[in-house]
Amino acid sequence: MNDRNEPRFRVRARHTESTITVYQAYRPEIGGPAARDGRFPAAWKRDRMTWIKPSFLWMMYRCGWGTKEGQETVLAVEISRDGFLWALRNACLSHHVPALHGEQADWKRQLRRAPARVQWDPERDLRLAPLPYRSLQLGLAGEAAARYADEWIVGIEDVTPLATEVHALVRAGELDAAAGLLPEERPFHVDDEVLARLGARGAGAGAVRLP
Image (cartoon, rainbow, N blue to C red; front, side, top):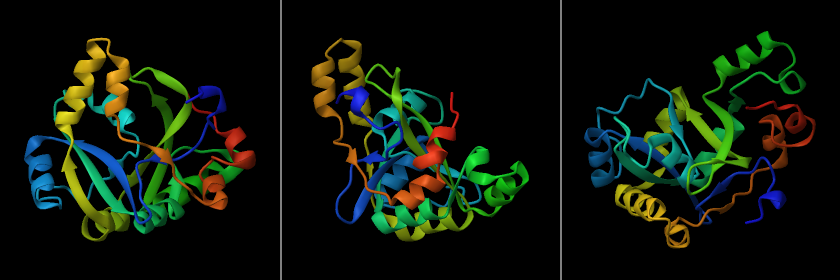
């Protein structure tokens, strides 16, 4: 991929006509039963915001290839496309952008009401260095978290072995071999109106100031 031709804001993911795959990492007591049963166990906290990530490499950056404490089990969670799009349509950008939200107080009210929130963080390469374009992180709380756990999940796979294998190849300097193992992530279509409200189109995109 030519980084110069890649839009700064775009949802990229492994997806089918009806599903999209997102990634999360948990301690083994959560991740193991989730992968075995295809649903989260009772110990999974529904009252906490849970962040899902369509980017495998951003997940690797976040969990340190599955080596960080409490993130040793990396899950690929296949969810319904309709559920994912519902979350985006009902999400609020996680930080205040005057061109999108007006006064900060108005944004705070939107954030409190929204069952989902969006962050755009730098995408990562195989060495987990930041790239010049952004990767979507989607936080789910309240109704969105409940729908995620109870309605949207199609399947859960433990991809910790994949993370370990790719990491070993990267450490050995075998980047082409590592890249060949990565999940195929393609542009995922989201309506322009939704992207604009999330700071990824039009005036809002130019106004989004991110580190």
